[in-house]
Image (cartoon, rainbow, N blue to C red; front, side, top):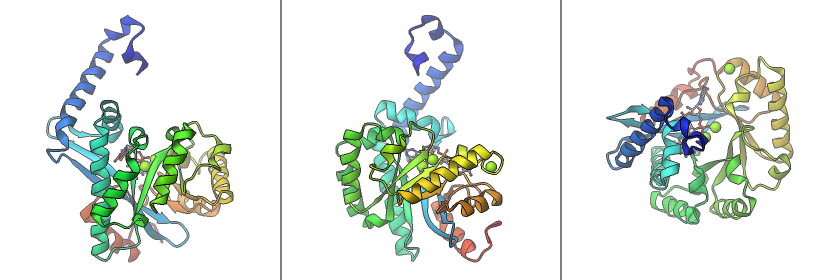
Length: 285
Ligand code: C2E
Ligand code: MG
Ligand code: MG
Ligand code: MG
C-alpha cells in the first residue's frame, strides 16, 4: 500500500506495481456490479465442539465468481471493497444472507447452530451497525443466539469506540468472536476488558502445533488464558487428527478446519450433518 501511494516515484513505473494497480482497478470495476448480478455467494465451514464432537455452528465465507475475472479470493476483493466503501453493501448482503440461511436451516429442523459472519473494519466502525444487525435479525426472523460476529484485533485497538460498539452488539443477544488471534497487535492486558465471547486462534499457530514446540506452547498459553477469562476458544485451520488430539488435550473448545470439512455450499450442509452424526466423516470418531 505504501508503494502505491508513492513517495518514491520510480516505483510507480515499476511494471509490477502497474500490474497490481491494473488488477485492483479491474476488481473494483467488476465488484460494483457483482452484487446486483448475483455473482456473490456464501459457503459455510463447520465448527465442532471438541469435547462432544458435535457441530455447533458454521462460519460463512463469501465467494465471488466473476464472469470476467473468474473466482476471486475474498482475501483479494474484501480489501478493495473496504477501500472503496463497497463493503457496506457487500457486508449487509453477507449478514442478511447468512441470517436468512440459518433461519431456513432451523425451519428445516437443523437447529441450535450459530452462523458466524466476518465483519470488516469499516462495518465495525459504522455507527449504524447495531441497528442494521438488529433489523436484519428481525427481517429474517433469526434469533440473535443464531448469530456470531467475527472481528479482528486491529478493529478493537481504538478502545473508546470499540467498547460501546461491542456492548450494543452483545445487548442484542448475539455473540462476538475475536478472529485470527495472535497475528495482530494483541494486548493481553486489554483482553480481559474486551467484551467478547470467543477467541479464534489463528491458523498459522495451529498448523505447526505438532511440529513446533514454540507454537504448541503459544497455543497452550492462549487456551489457558481463555479459561481464566472464561472465553470460549476455537482453533482455526485444524488439518490433521494429530492436531485435533493435541488441541483436545490442551483443553481447546472448538475446532474448525479442513480435517472436518472445507467450506461447503448451503445445500450441502444437511448431508454433511447427516454423514457427520453417522460417524462417517473422515477420521473423526
Ligand atoms: P477467516 O475469517 O480467518 O476465515 C478462515 C479462512 O481460512 C477461510 O479462507 C477458510 O477457507 C480458510 N481455512 C479454513 N480451514 C482451513 C484449513 O484447515 N487449512 C487452510 N489452509 N485454510 C483453512 P477464505 O474463505 O479464503 O477467507 C479468507 C479471509 O477472507 C477470511 O479469513 C476473512 O478474513 C475474509 N472473509 C471471508 N468472507 C468474508 C466476509 O463475508 N466478510 C468479510 N469482511 N471478510 C470475509
Ligand atoms: Mg473468520
Ligand atoms: Mg480467521
Ligand atoms: Mg498442519
